[in-house]
Image 1 (spheres, rainbow, N blue to C red):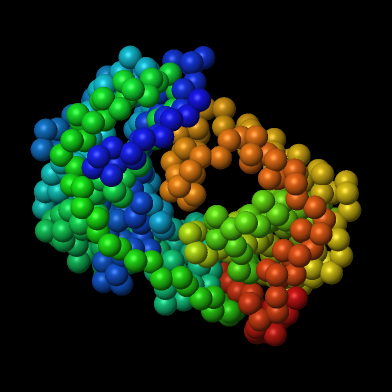
Image 2: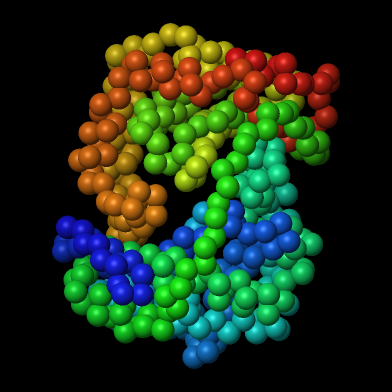
Length: 418
């Protein structure tokens, strides 16, 4: 059973009781991410996330680590394009300490200059790490072209130049204007009582500022293009994509099923036709990127450099087939069952249930039951798939990026006609 409540400060609290478990997962989710940064402060949200682990007014970084280790808990965080999160998983008996620790971190970070200087080196190494992982790098190059000159196209980590420009004062200025009660959602799932948690949260987060920051997000426009990043590798890495729907779009369930048919499973068309039938790639799949006002359907493949054009042509042929011919009943049902099964299996832990609560609140402002979601997937028809394919897979809207050795001949936008 789920409960939703907004405290007088504007802080939102969501809980889901799972009486059969002994653990509780609690997350503090911030409704701000890298897309809310200016060009000059690119990477500041991610940098602040790192700094919240480096000590508070009451605890050193070592004491934070010792506190969570002493109760056998798990503590982690992430920064995304539209939000950031700090989450902890503990036994139910340690919930008060978990809430106290989270509140201390997200309300009273020390942000000491010497810690900032050390962390700059850490994040510079993190940026280099992306360059050394080609399947990550090709997606980073893709979004930079896809949403060129827009915050959604910038790397979450920032650039070496912006990272080195951050000072303790600049980080604190960002923190104080962003970590505000109306921007935060606290979600908890597991062996938890809503009323008890509300009392703990109300006390621990009582000093959160109740003001709003007035941040405005401008929708992006897609910039079609073909980008090749030459790199000395053993194979080429391809990312090809088209526009997709925002996360709350009414056609989202049809989009999910379409992605599963295209490249979201081992029986998908891309996997079967490119890997199994032709042996052109070990890894090939499609995935969805969804934000509040934009989205992308991306296709990834890793192949030998002399097969890049063939893999791209085969991929475009699959998009054209979905756009022109309805899927048959068996393929459609198989995709829906795969999607429903994956969803249900993913929600078996307290941490995944907690994340589901927070994401639904941030995306829809309400909670959808599992039955509602499954019903939405089951209601998708072959006509829905055809209509969505025709809407998304349009000529002149595709973007492709390749990271790998130099290729023979040039690839241009003309090669991306569906």
